[in-house]
Amino acid sequence: MLKIVYPICCGIDVHNKFLVACIATTNDKGVTTYKSHRFSTYTNDLRKLSDWLSSNSRPHVCMESTGKYWVPVYNILEATCKITLAHPKYVKAIHGKKTDKKDARWIADLFKHDLVAGSFMPPLPIRQLRDLMRYRFKLTNFKSSEKNRIQNCLTVSNIQLANVVSDTFGKSSMKIIDYLLENPDDKDFDFVPLLHASMLNKVDKIRLALDGMITPEQQQKMNIIL
Image 1: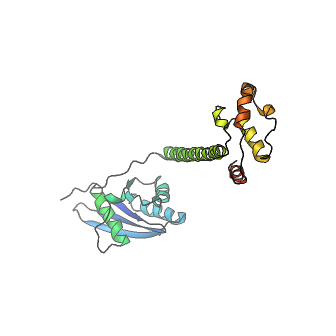
Image 2: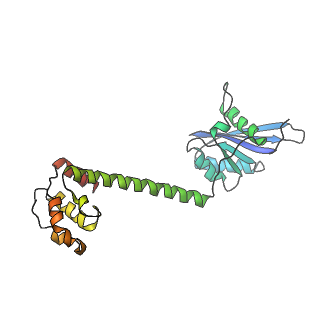
């Protein structure tokens, strides 16, 4: 007979619009009784779930990490309950006549014997920092992608600034690009006043690099990006 590790525990089957919680209580004789309740995933009902668990001895809670549906539940229960977040493959019920109540009960039965491997969940400040860093990484990649698009437009227009300057997106280069976008037909403009003092020794090369043509379509693309 398997050892009962958690005499009072709760299995939660989480869905998009609702969840089913099942509290499994095992007495000294090894007899387990179950109490199930269905809640919506609205914040008010999740608070009712927290109160319901608190009124039932605040059992250890186990739920599967289904999509992002578990996150609001975890956020509400984190302060009052000890939560084990399980990968779905570890709490998957046997195929057959599956119901939400049976799934929640199955999770509770597995968890009371400590048969569920919990996922690592860092504290809330660390989770927030991780989300922020992921978003920063995403924006950085997006910025790099847009810069590549601009560089491609310049290359196919035979504007070879990248061959002359160290940074195509430096202040001097961007002033020249902005002027070209506003005045695409002006090929002989005086760009020297737009240059930083450190680039004055590259005037002749820059003049050769600008001997290209930006088509209306490329001009429109770059205006959108910039």
